[in-house]
Amino acid sequence: MPKVDSSALGKEPISKLLIKQSAPASIGILVMSLNILVDTIFVGNWIGSIAIAAINVVLPISFFIAALGMAIGIGGSSMISRALGANDQKKALKTFGNQITLTILLTTSFVVAGLLFVNDLIPAFGGKGDIFEPAKIYYKIVLYGVPILALNMMGNNVIRAEGKPKFAMIAMIIPSVGNLIADYFLINVFDLGMAGAAWATTGSYAVCFLYVLWFFLSKNSELKITFHHFGLNKKILKEIGALGFVTLARQAVVSITYLLMNNILFKLGGESSVAIYAIIGRMLMFALFPVLGVTQGFLPIAGYNYGAQNPKRVRESINKAIMYASVLALVVFTVIMIFPKEIVSVFTKDEYILKETPSAMRWVFAAIPIIALQLIGSAYFQAIGKAVPALLLTLTRQGFFFIPLILILPNYFGELGVWISFPLADVISTIVTGFFLNREVRLHLKPSEMQTTSIKY
Image (cartoon, rainbow, N blue to C red; front, side, top):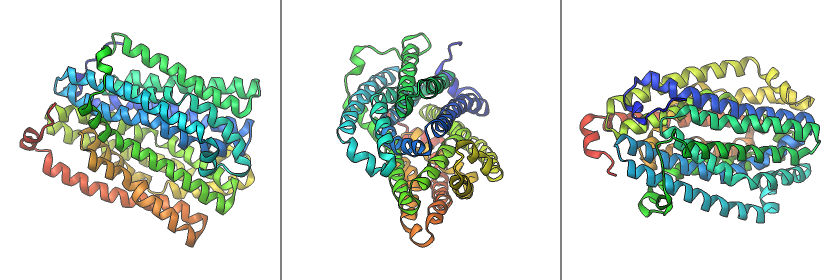
C-alpha cells in the first residue's frame, strides 16, 4: 500500500476526499456491524434467544470502558489533524504519546472496578431472571480484552487522522473476521456456549492490536514517537479530555439508554421484549454503517482544513458530507420499511419475536432519512476543537430528548411508547443541531474570522 502524506487532506477535491476517507470507514463499520449481526445470529441459533439478550446486557458495560479509548482517540485525533494541518509535528507526536498512556491507565482501572462489581452491574443493566448467568459468563471473559479493544479504538482514530483510511479499515475488518471464524469453532464445533462466544471476541481484539502496533512501528505512519512522548502533559490532557469527553459522554448516555431500555422492556414484556430490542439495536449498528462512515471520513477533512485556516474547504466538506450521508440514510430507510419481516427472520425462529419486531423496527427507523444533519453537525464542532457545543449537540438526541421520552411515553402507550420515542428524538435533535450548525457556519467560517480565531499550538 503506497505511503500517503496527510497534506492530501488540504489539497485534493473535497468530493474525492470524502469518498476516499468515507468508503474505507464505511466498509470497516460494515464489516464490524456484520460481525455483530452474524455473531448475534450464531448465538441466537446455536445457544438461544436468551443468549442474545445476555450479550445485549453486557455490551453497554464493556463498550463504555472501551469507549474511553475511542474518546481519547477522537479527542486526540482532532488535535493531531489540526496540528498536521498547521504543520506542527511536535504537537502531533506528544499528543499521540499522551493518548497511549492515558488509554492504558484509565481502561485498566475501570476493568478492575468492573470485575469487582460484576454481580451488581449485570442486574442493573437488565440482566435479570434467566439472563443473569449467561450474561455473567460472557461479561467476565470479554472484560479482560477491553483494554486491548480501547487501544485499538484509539489507534484506529489516529490512523484516520493521519489520512490513512485504508489502514484504519483493515484494523476494523481484522477483529470482525477473526471473531466470526472463532465463533464457528468455539461455539458450534467445540460447544463452549457463552464462554466460546466471549473468548472469540476477546481473541479477535488481540489480533487487531498486533496489526495496529505493526502500523505505527512501520514506515506507513508519520507519528514516530519515542519514550519521552509518553510523559503526560497537562495542557494536552486538558484538550484531549475536553474533546474526548464528548465521545465518552455520548457512550455513557448510550449505556444509560441500554440500562433504561432493558429494564423498561423487561418490565413491560419480559425477556422477549429485551430480545426484540437486542435485534433492533444490532440493526441500528448495521444499517447506519454508510452514514457513520461518511461522518468518520468527514472528521479529519474538516479538522485538517480548519487547522490550515481554509474556511472554503471546511464549508464544502460540511455541505457534501450532509448530502452524501442523507442519500445513504434514505436508502437504508427504504430497505427497512420494505423488508422488516425478512430481516427479523434471520435472527430467530421465536414466533412472538417474529410477530412483534417488524412493527417496532419500522418505528425506530422512521426518522432515519434526516439523521445525517444531526451526526455531521455535532461531529463538526468536535473536529474543529469546540468541545462545549460538540458535547451539547451530541447529547441532544439520546440524552436530552430520547431518555425523557422513554421515561414518559410508556406510561401512556405501553411498549409502543418506547418505539415511538426513537423518531421523535431524531426529529427534535436534528432541528436543534441544524440551527446551531447554520449559525456557526454563517458567523465563523469566514476568512477574516478564521485568521483571528485560529487555534494556537
